[in-house]
Length: 318
Ligand SMILES: Nc1ncnc2c1ncn2[C@@H]1O[C@H](COP(=O)(O)OP(=O)(O)OP(=O)(O)O)[C@@H](O)[C@H]1O
Image (cartoon, protein in one colour):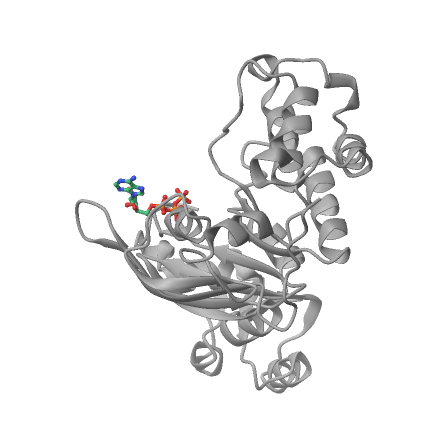
């Protein structure tokens, strides 16, 4: 294999001021982010946010309208032969060689990148992705889930150092989603940096060290997933009262509490600077007797909804 080593001193990916316009208004408006070597990074956003266009510019499928992309320090226009070889991509649309068998497609695919077929690596991908019983099937006859697994194998066949997965689990059943993410973690642990998009925000939260949230061609937030959730999300305390209330006391209105129709269930946002214990103390001071309580931790999904304005129909659907 004619190896091109990724320079680990550079970020796996540097996207700087990326722009794109097709026929109408700009759809990517100066997007910048870096992915550190070894990181799993999530690019999230509602339909039409500009994620796929950004990815297509990164991998050289779509011409860059402005800005630049560097992969392990190599410019993806000037050094495109090197960046192609360093990058594996699984596009959102199912792109397959309809009349090839899985076996044949995987045997020849690394050659497209000037990389010799490595049977040990190919067999590892075949086994880990459960493709072995299907090697002689032609693509056109594969089920949707099998096509996705094949596309992951194809994206990895030339041993890229940066793997880009655009909606890898779209339309895939729960079991396969889990096993695909588990495999992605393994690939990452063996030294491959990963950029992914997904509409499954719970999975993004579990998988990604950092995420960028994008809408209307712009990045709205970019930080460690846990910090983002902590900073933007609201914990909520749900309380079941011993005795129902006819209405909310003014002190609780001031705390933005809500009372369910049964008068028995109170919901209170817990501000970042307050502990649940302090809130419970205030309820006791008001003479309220608590039967049960539950604190709900904030989730990436609600931060996403808040930032993209989806709640108000502001940005399409997830
Ligand atoms: N080849 C193209 N020609 C014209 N417009 C395009 C083209 N590709 C994408 N667009 C437009 O660019 C905008 C961003 O689309 P893009 O596919 O990048 O969004 P996305 O965030 O990937 O959405 P999704 O989650 O639905 O895949 C959309 O308005 C889309 O219609």
